[in-house]
Image (cartoon, rainbow over all chains, first blue to last red; front, side, top):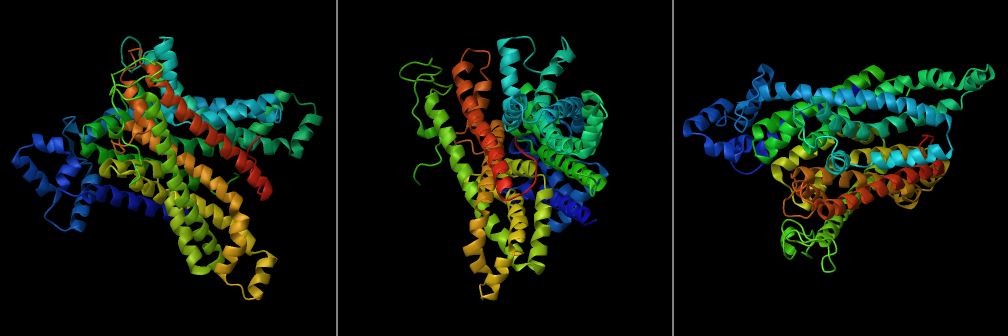
Length: 303
Length: 252
């Protein structure tokens, strides 16, 4: 319950920050929210209309209430670079991001689970040491570096996969490289978590009992140990899901994948801040909500 | 003040996209600047930034974390709640959002990273200091009239030294990670040389042959920094855990 309160305070802080940040910079808040280029293209009437709608002549707390009301109504503003409503951009790009994260996180979790169990059974061996260090090395790289390294190898040197995303000739081939990069980003974490959890299970008495009963190695590994680490592994899955919502931005930018991260990047470089404000709010809300749900479901559970 | 951080305008310009030669060991980039010099100054800038953040994190977490454990009561409870809230905040996205709006200079950027990064270290120091404070010899010191600040200065700082190393490595890694990621997106100060920016600039010329000397050196340099910090971090964490008898099962 205490943690739920913390998370609700966090959500309120996020709302206030996303409202207050554009007003923090010196100058006109209209140009901060919509970007200077958008303002240059607008007529006087449009600017006056926006001022009126945002209540810029009213006190700050009243503007905040207007901001909240608009969000709850689903009126998220209009992006002048895309010439579309912000909610429509999100509606188009969000499924792409979600499918990329979903597919690669599932694959990396399953792979990491299986290989991590395998490594825990051979703890202390050369295979375990080498793969552990390699995993630590990969997991300390930022997402965009992993993406670029794969891009240079597969798209520039070997020329077997397309460097940037396009629907033709094959959507599957274009999807492959971003997906592999995200798997590479997440797999080390999944592997190390499973391995470290399983190492402490291997020492337990019931594993000795199972060995004494001449159960096969494979059965001990994947059933006896696997069942005992499943719970924290699911927690890891949820926590990484929220973590990857930030990391996926960079993978999308490297491969120009049409997801929400790419849309965010485009609006940053064109200084179209109407989308940036809502997108940052949305992503941080998703992250905090997933963390909250994870903690609510798994608090007090075996860790 | 002393020419730091190094900016693009400080570097001399030569011919554009020269191949590596004796004069320019790594060739030149799209603005005609020497690539070796750019990579070195980008690395130097990241190191300066992470030193700033590490100093800040360590000072805050040592003082605040141990004072929380020493004074206890309302002071401890209040700051624990604040720490919990800060840990729950999605720090990466917020650092990004703030940088988009105010395009901070290096000093401001280190302050922003510090604001969103002090909580974990402070929590770690607090949880360890709490165990020390419960020990008998601290009670003895108190009995002889030693105050909280005396205990902090004479006993606690010595005991938590190894933890400070762990926190320093973690925050250095996180700082370089977020700085290079954000400068890759081009949302840090555009004047300051940075490895992420060098990588992003050379990505636009992938189909020319220049990527071999424009992309690979900054990329490898960043990989070396981050991988060495990561491996060093895991090893010290394992060692410190064993020394402080914390059972966390990390490291081979």
